[in-house]
Length: 401
Image 1: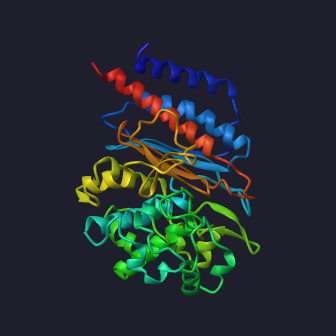
Image 2: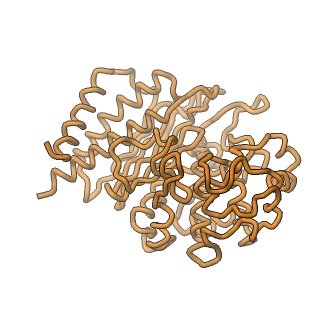
Image 3: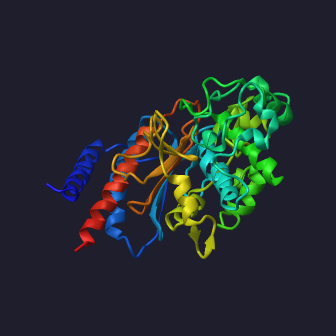
């Protein structure tokens, strides 16, 4: 049996496995569909049938209150659907496809790494530049040899997160304390996922451009791509549409960053703080699948895309500058994506995977931390990625002579 026949058989099995669940339908749902030349209504409906059962079961098991799933290709969205609720407390509200989400660590690739890549593309920065050449204070405690690439691929040797109390005196003091940190291992020798590393990358952007990662990414990425509902510090109209996360000081967080360090940094940080919608993230994903350009606007050139998304062995799997490729953090990836796929997850229950080999993107947005932080969605997001990949492989095979 050839690979395509195996895929077809696997996809049929997925449908059979999901059908017996007959889980109770989510309390609220909204579907938005987009006809595409390269995909069929049948493809969309087949994916939807399989995903409906998977998501309904996740909601029934309280893995999340709700989510928005978006699947598409370079030319547009195949499927977009909202499931469940955007809040259960203080009041129940339905999830909609235009719900605004706290992206958590999706901030790392979408805002910070993409901004760094733009600086590299402009010739203002190089992957092998030492961070201490840009931030001299960072050289303290034997960190002089840490490079931009070390930070982007989480092999800098920095601690994952330093103490919250280090941030309580404001951004200036917080970065002074980060500069004083010692490495846990020599630079380039050990993979250790680090929020601190991306905080430093945000500071690199500030030092090189005079703009915060918030200002730079807004001007050079989100505004040109017409991502009008993406950015740090969302305005009131977007905050009111945001999925609720957890309580902080007896107040439910809605449209305010969930990450405690980003919160103490006044909402703007290199590792977390970005908010967006499924539609806006689809525009970003389509830009990547179209070689760095969308609707006549070029953000990245082909060489920069290749540099940003090509995996390197980091000792705990494969990472690229800013992205996961295949590592211990890839349970939200899906099993059938090609070797070219890259993506990332976020603590609040978010994930994005882009696969140039299949011309496919899968976006999963949830507020799994609501109401009490106990939700868990990575395996569920991975199943959705597997269903989407199986469906497009089967569909492409069906139309190939």
